[in-house]
Length: 97
Image (cartoon, rainbow, N blue to C red; front, side, top):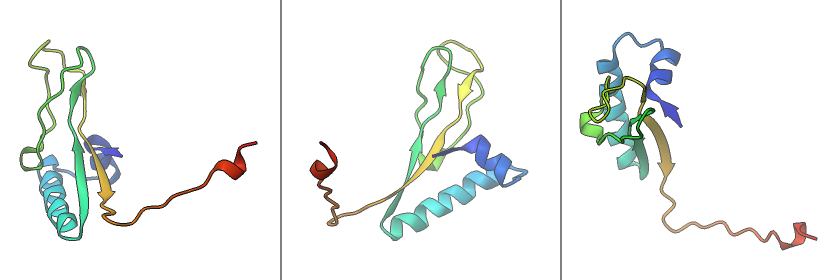
């Protein structure tokens, strides 16, 4: 799981807007391939307020609307492969004594 600020730093991206557009494009491509890009929304580190977050309106908030603090946890991104009919079952009983 990576947050947007870390992605911006790692990719040395000069524009958040360009990165967000690229993420939207990647999300559409992954969806067509049966993989899901999950957005974990921003939250306020002070009061715990959770921002509404959609891939179409992906933004990095600057201030909490509830408590007005600027300590905001950045949204993060997860890529989850959808395993529709494949299950892996492990028998761990032989490892437990």
